[in-house]
Length: 59
Figure 1 (cartoon, rainbow, N blue to C red):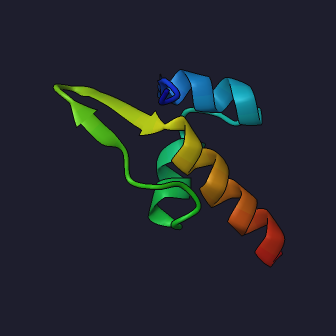
Figure 2 (cartoon, rainbow, N blue to C red):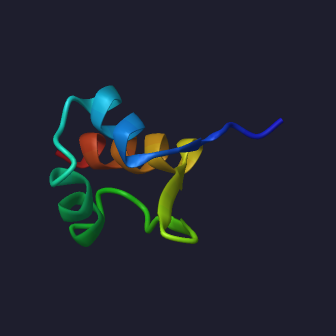
């Protein structure tokens, strides 16, 4: 079963960041590109966790 998609708010709450940081992390390739659903942006939870795990390991 696939995990649900995350909203910007979900990412902010999980990683204790502001909504302005999320697009910065996407531009810096710390987060994968979002999936557009109309005007809404969503991220696959598994991809977000994997991307941030890789970023943490490289530091």
